[in-house]
Image 1 (cartoon, rainbow, N blue to C red):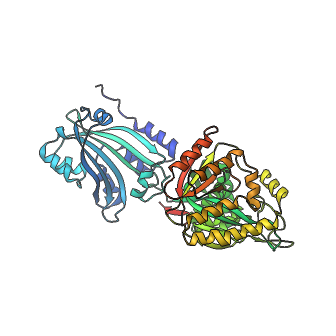
Image 2: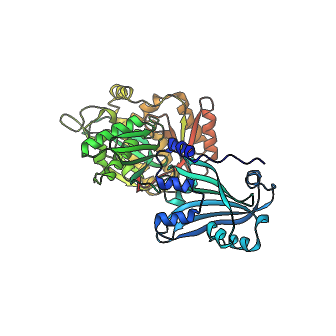
Length: 511
């Protein structure tokens, strides 16, 4: 077998930086070293490194492993998965997997390897194994969900990974993969914010005859999510998805709270204007990251006011702040009040987010499915403003029925964990008040989605905000519902996200 060309480390580092951003000197050393990673970690952290074994077993080499190790398919190899940890703090530093062909090991070497909790470098040194490390490849993993619990990071944070072989006497002795989070081993402190998403069940009162208007009901979800990173900088630099919207939010927050500049990366973002509150969550995440970066204490409501969110519905702001099932109380309405006419949040700048009058956890057993067809996005901007102007005020009798549905059926169902009662309330809400207007403006496929998801077993299905996302709520058995939604969307394309409610708000960590 021809010997592969040596890895050009500088070119690989440059490629990684194009994909994820600047790497620190320590990160470059961890990726590029051909020596003991354990020793390097001990120098960097100033603490001993210990091994925690997650998996240790003998397996048959598959085609990939046999090719990497230059053995026959089916040969016995030792498969080991470990965490390299700071022995003082307990922090996981590196996640490593290795494959070792047993036929190339002396008995004493094999015995130490199978004991599991000894670093590879220590074993090699103990047995005076003359070897070299051949670097094979560097990778940026942009969605390493299985790693989030290992490193206590957010699921959409990128990971850095490298593959290499340990060569002895011209043959591969081990094939190893090492992985660590991009936001670890950085040389500048940074703040990472991960937001939830939300479904907006309905606006409550767009009749306005009782001196208040708007009001809202919503549910906070784990997925999809937004991840924003920020570190101090000499000027404002914003990268990633929806960078212009993120920049506008950053400028507003910097101006309102007199903060310095920053380098901001929108690491992950879901689609805007599909009914999941992405605009609010992105703006709030940027604002929160900047405030934390500069030690400025600011509430979610203060940040929302700075970025111009929450002027009609407060569900997105409350979802960011506290999560769960949320009901807000709307705004005072009339001459000289908070609002004097009917308009969406995007056209209600200067109006404070409404008060939250109820927040409650939702059962972990309830599953939410989001069907997102590839059809025109929901009303936004001028179009959304025109809808409010054309259809408001809505009939008072429908508002009365809607409020009764929320108070008498939906809220008790949440508190009593009554899935069927909650679903029935969701279904009825689609026929009332401003939600009936929103549903009536949709592509016919949206009604088909709601009908078919209910027929397939959903307790309830409805339109989130102006859509086009349709949500359904069910117990854990969701395969038929997901299949039904995909069948409806097969002519236009789309995706289904299966998720749970999040009974807490946005999450933050410093690195």
